[in-house]
Image 1 (spheres, rainbow, N blue to C red):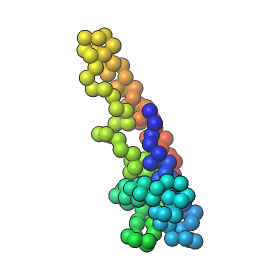
Image 2 (cartoon, rainbow, N blue to C red; image 1 turned 30 degrees about the vertical axis):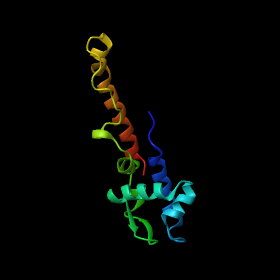
Image 3 (cartoon, helix red, strand yellow; image 1 turned 135 degrees about the vertical axis):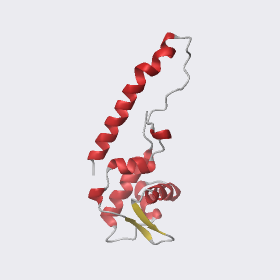
Amino acid sequence: MQISSRFTIAIHIFACIDTFEKDKKITSDFLASSVNVNPVIIRNILSQLKSAGLVEVQRGSGGTSISKPLDEITFLDIYHAVECIDKGELFHFHKKPNQECPVGRNIHKVLDNKLEQIQLALENELKKIL
C-alpha cells in the first residue's frame, strides 16, 4: 500500500505558504517550482484543499493563503482533503473471494477487523500532527 504523493505535496504547499506568504504572492506556478511538478497538479490539489476549507485561492494570479491558523489544521484534515479513499476505506479489499476455498471463505473474517484497526491507528496518529 502506498499513499499517493498528493498528501506530501499538500504538506509541501502548506510549508511554502507559511514560509513565503509575507514575501511573495503564492501562485500555483511558484508552488509548482518548489515541488518540481506541473502547475496543473498543484491547481488540482489546491482545489481539493479549498473544497475542504483549508486554503483560499484567488483567481488568476491572486495567490493562495491558508484559511485558518495552522495549529487548527491536522495532517488528518489534509489527508482527508486530498486522498481519494473509496467509501472511507483505506484498504481496497477484494469483495468476492472464492467461497469454495477455505482461505477465500474466511479471509474477510480474519482480516477486515485488523485492517480497520490499522486505518484507525493511522488516522489517530495523523490527528496528532499539526
